[in-house]
Length: 224
Figure 1 (cartoon, rainbow, N blue to C red):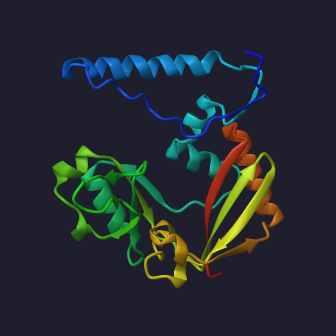
Figure 2 (figure 1 turned 120 degrees about the horizontal axis):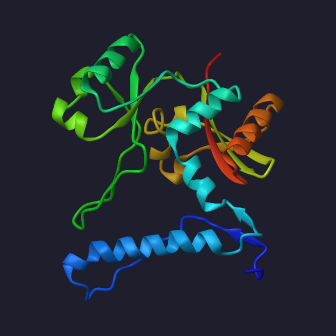
């Protein structure tokens, strides 16, 4: 289709199933609709500029690939373990002492309950004593990283090679010292920040490796 020169592909919604479907048919209907849309994105507006192209966006969402490519272009990466192996997880946490270990999920985790507020899983500091049973640890893989001491944080948004950075005063709020997303929006203090040339080059290089025209970076600035 040549009617589109730019396509903004931003968090498309999943298909909504018809209420009259039988429960036993819903799984198949959802799968068929998802496959339809996966096929649809492969043929529409092939000559347009995509922000971002679906295949590239899906690839870029891979946390392991993000860190691997980030290291290749020169970023400093915290010591990291991706695992559901209880013995490896415990050894990793113990090996980080006296520094702490943080736990993160691969994607946003949300619990809905009509009778209470929405609950989100933010990045958390953990110790071996915080871990649940081995069986539950094995049931869900997670991301474990050595905790990095923060002076402040950066959020950098890129459109092509143009980046805009803000300094996040996350350490000045008790809720944001581990994960700045936990700070209420009205309480988060931000200010414009000039991107250092060497950092700008690394960000652009990583965007290029991932095939992205739009992307956001979350970075820690340490006290030193």
